[in-house]
Structures are given as structure tokens and as C-alpha cells.
Length: 209
Image 1: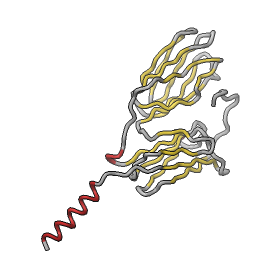
Image 2 (image 1 turned 30 degrees about the vertical axis):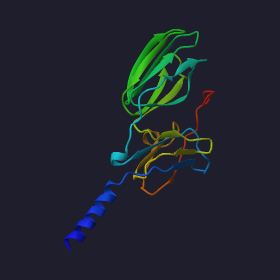
Image 3 (image 1 turned 30 degrees about the horizontal axis):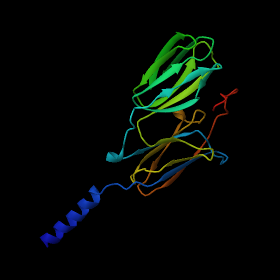
Image 4 (image 1 turned 135 degrees about the vertical axis):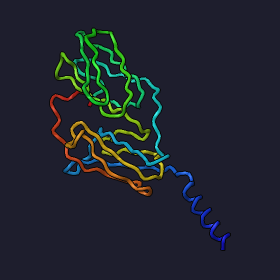
């Protein structure tokens, strides 16, 4: 009887300590009319030890050209350095008041560049103190499972762990606090979807949005 109990306990422990199996996780984002939402940033935060932060390496650039930021939307890992080269014949004054990163790059001219270190996860809204029409966003992520939705409104994580966790979807025009929708995901759930309400996009929009 004691031996049988020991085998039961051993089996339970083996289940609890078994490695998580990676499997594709697909997330679809649609608007209130059921149309796909492209360029939403979807992030999966698996529970417990399955969570994994991205490496901060890489070269990230947000340039100023034709009185616009390029690209309009960037995704960078926590710890990334982002350079802001000025390619315009006029000066720019780049800033952000976002809680994830407050900074100010005072007047710098053509062919000059400044660099900012992003050390906290969150959404950083960019502006120019001289040109009010300039805007852009940097999403700083602390999860390796972060991606933009395609033209079909789909983001896929090929190696997501088979673990419960939390999904978030962010979009600059999403009608929600911070522009973020959130839902739980189960361990066996390999498909998820968000139905979101969007504000009208401001005009004119950047050409590369």
C-alpha cells in the first residue's frame, strides 16, 4: 500500500515537472464589424517559469523624414537602444511624456542623431515639439512572444509554450484604457481572438503606416 502511494505521488510529480511543449498559438484581432485589424501588437505572457524576456540586442531606428517619423510603429525589447536620426532639412525636437519612457531630445539638425535607452515595458508615444502633426509609437516588450497582426488581422507565435497565460492586444486607435485589450488563455488553447472597437484614424496618416 505504501509503495502504491509512492508511485502515485511520483507520477503526479512527474506531470507537474514535465517540460512544457511548444505549439503554435494563433491570435486574430477584428473590429466591431468583424473586419481584420492590421498592425495591432499582440503579446503573450505565459504563466510562471514559461515566461521569457527577449534579448535587448539589435539595431533600432526611428528616423525623421518628410516631417514624419519612420516607422510609425516599432516593437523593441526592454533594454533596447533606439536611434533617432534627422533626415530633414529642418530641425526636430523629439519627446515623449509616456510613463514607460519620458525623454526629450532638444533641437538637432539634419544628419544629426540622438539615442534613447528603453528600460521599461510599455507603449511610448512620440511627438515633435516643433511639428505637431508628427506622431509615432514604440511598443517596448518584456515578452519574446510579441508580434504585429498581418493584413488578415492575425499574429502567430510558432513556439509558444503550452501554458496558461495572458494575452494583450494594443492598437493606437483601440477604444480602451491605454489602447489595450486583455484576456486569459488556457494551456490547451491554441487559438484566440479579440473583437475591438477602434477610433477613426487621424488624417493625414504616415505613408508607411
